[in-house]
Image (tube, rainbow, N blue to C red; front, side):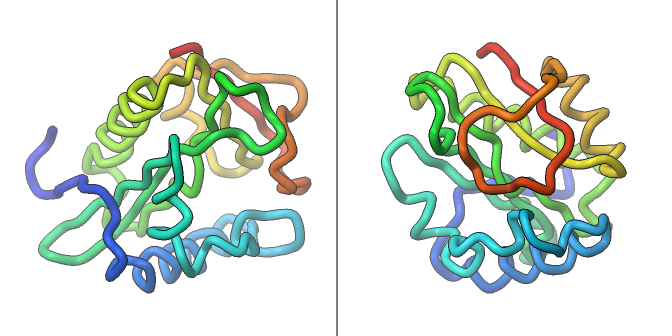
Length: 162
């Protein structure tokens, strides 16, 4: 892992920082209207939401400050062997330092450890850096969404075999 940041499991004290990151980053990409993850009930209680079976959430910390995060959980309405990469957002200072690639590796390892065979994600047009990371990480584009996430405003879908 590149130096300068740490990826670790979320702790309860991280909830406010993670919620603030989600609420700062999503509008930056026009993802603050209906049908986006910014409105999910779990945003304010990420530690509790990802303390459930077959779930993991990690934060990126730099100089003692949380600057990003991502997690995996079973895909709502999906098959039992499919997880979803969720809530992967980074503040500008976390971008371009290798944190995205390191976080992706950590999440995919967690997905395998939880017994998943495939990882799904959804995003939207305009999140170009994120989509480049997904493609570099072995995700393949899908023509339509999977499961029932409720994120009806997302328009890009990806799946990766684990």
